[in-house]
Amino acid sequence: MRLIARYAKEREGTFEIVTVFESKTQREMISKENPVIRTLAKKHPSAIWFERKMSDDFGIIIEDAFDKRPLVHQERFPKAIHPMQKSFQKNTLDFAEFIPYKYEAIQGDGVFQVSVGPIHAGIIEPGHFHFSQAGEDMLHQEVRHFYKYRAIEKMLEGKTLLEAKPVIERISGNESIAYQTAWRDIVCQAAGTELPLSLRKRHAFLLEMERIIHHLTDLGFIPNDAGFGAALAFASKLSEDARRQLQKVTGHRFGFDAIGFENKVLDISSLHDYLEGLQKDIVFFETWIMDIPSLWDRFDTTGILQKADALKYDTVGVVARASGFPLDRRLEPFYLEHGFEIQTEQSGDVAARFKVRLQEVKNSIVMMQHFLEEDDTHIVTGKINDGDYTAFAESSLGELFMNIEIKEGIIERFFVRDPSFMNWQTLHLMMPNNIIADFPLINKSCDLSYAGNDL
Amino acid sequence: MIQFWNKRVKEGILTENTALDKELEAIKRKIKENVKKKFAGSLAIRMVDSGSCNACEAECNALSNPYYDLERLGIYFVASPRHADVMLLSGLMTFNMTPHVLEAYKQMPEPKWVITLGACPVMEAPFEKTFAVKAPAADHLPVAHHIPGCPPEPLEIIKGILDFLKKI
Image 1 (cartoon, rainbow over the protein chains, first blue to last red):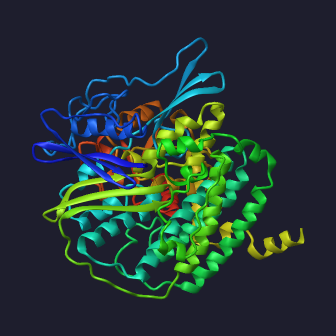
Image 2: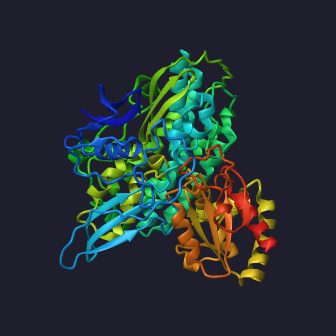
Image 3: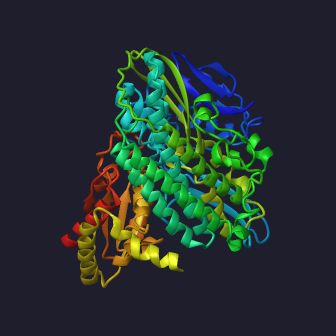
């Protein structure tokens, strides 16, 4: 049974621990005086980050956890402050005394440690990686994040769904449309409004557009990290073209504020032309790139995530699909009717993740052609009703889970789990038997979000 | 080969195909002149993300694509603050990132400048001030110039760099 999320909500006198599995949701009430729970990490290793986050956020104690280090709160974060508690209302904090973080590290003769980040060498988000090395060989790697922690969950409390939207769509720039799609589903549920097919098609078109931009960027950057820069030049031109198309359709290069309840008329024939051109380009790209042996020497068998591990660690998205795990939120009638075909590979290595992205771009183009429709529907949503609402979206990175509880018309608790939150926890499994020079390549092949993960 | 020459004659250089091309060319000429005059032909930028949504970084990466190709003007993104003239700062200055940003600034050799990028470092994005946010950046660093936008488009970033060059 796949673990999707585990998080806490504050009630009067108690904390409610919500654990979301694929087929059921468990709720457990614990008292605030003695907020102790038992870990789920023995069965679901990925539960550990959720539980460490709960400890930081609310002060909940995970009695039998093997890892009780803070997760979100870093070296200078004041101790014994649990900012997600309703009673915490400060909007400023002073730096506390520096308490070093104990990294997971392998000790031994000739074994040494390499630290990378939080500011990386390129134009990239901040995060930290800690390696235990024997020469070039990676023995172990630990991922440490939350440098971008902006306290989004707290920021959104007390806002209406409409007020929260500009923030929600900026949680992760790569997944803006996906975040907006999840938000839209929650608005529809809370208002009892059914979305007309034409709007669903428009939104699905935009979501695929966002996916191909993200994938095209990676299709350039992954070979670039294996010393083949020509691919970056070619693919970055394609992703720039796609971004300009997104701007033409939505008025914004990242589709901020693109998902609403109004359908605007599109220039369908020019979009069809564009898609046709892209289709040709991507076929050219594929023929070209599949025929470069030195590249596949680097890709094949590098950074393997075994299928059993992909399952055990509850991975999602491209990472799961490249390890032979057919998991995709688009596996539903609406998408299947419009040409969706799930793309999987078996080998779980860099090559597999690259191929999955390539095939997904091709499949997205087919779907986008089917989603194009002349229409100017405009709907008005009903009044937002109080309740506890959940939505999913398949972002370019994988399954996105969002839960919003509304009380007296405003957000009581906002929780979101980015696909990266699951997949970052599996990165270290891909490292043994590889050399440190392969790390950027493996990391890029997963291309996970820092902003969405850190919140 | 014939196919290649046909295509080359028909399509020309990729960058000549954009609608904004004339404007871009003019800006580029001016930037090149300014970089030559004030930075001996080579301006090194260290991009630091202090807690953005990653859109600003995506746009800075786009500056290297064949449409913009910023390096033609002598402007480089470098991997170390020790190689940089300018820190290009995006993001909200999160509580967790602020000490690292300040450390990176300290590592830059004199003379040095900070340019803020996008709505976050000046608290113009819809993000609110929480305990985890230390923005505006100007509270912590001497900011020489600001490039507005959420995120600023690549062309706006180029224009912003030009404005900065004119100013100093």
